[in-house]
Image 1 (cartoon, rainbow, N blue to C red):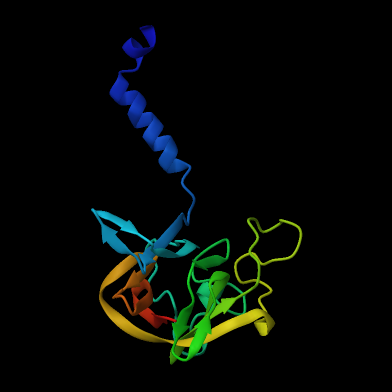
Image 2 (cartoon, rainbow, N blue to C red):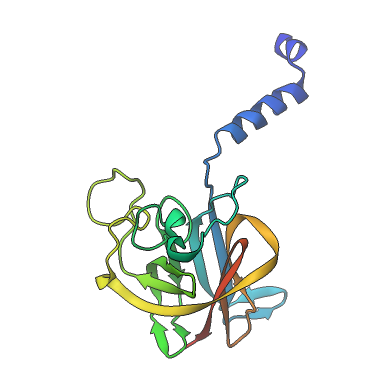
Length: 202
């Protein structure tokens, strides 16, 4: 009773919320997910299979020209790594319960690390069997982000279509777009750049 007199309930909630926001990581984790191949039965979707991406979501925080230009294109977001981790912190991970076909290349169902080779003339999506570490100093095999990436574990490399958005995305976003029964697109959006890779269900 004394506590609520000294600190009204609304004030306690406000303090709790501000502490939670203060503890939020600089690049929160995010997930893009889609379920395909099923059907609705009595308002329930049954028989579907999941495709999901777990990734870190960096924020512009006032920066402009995030990908740079000319010879320095992509170097800032790569942060010294040979390719971009397609996000922040822990390596971006793609999980699929069904085979996906990118052009004439098949990605078997499974779990992969996802990277992007950034070039001013176009991007290349990379799916790799490199394992992912949960922390930079975690011992054992696997990568933190894209540091020490090597192409020997690549399963699939495919070009991405790169365009300009009419609005600016402040937080890096991965999304599944234009999904149909036949396939869809894996899309990446940040600042005014959008890059997509079309896939079909093999």
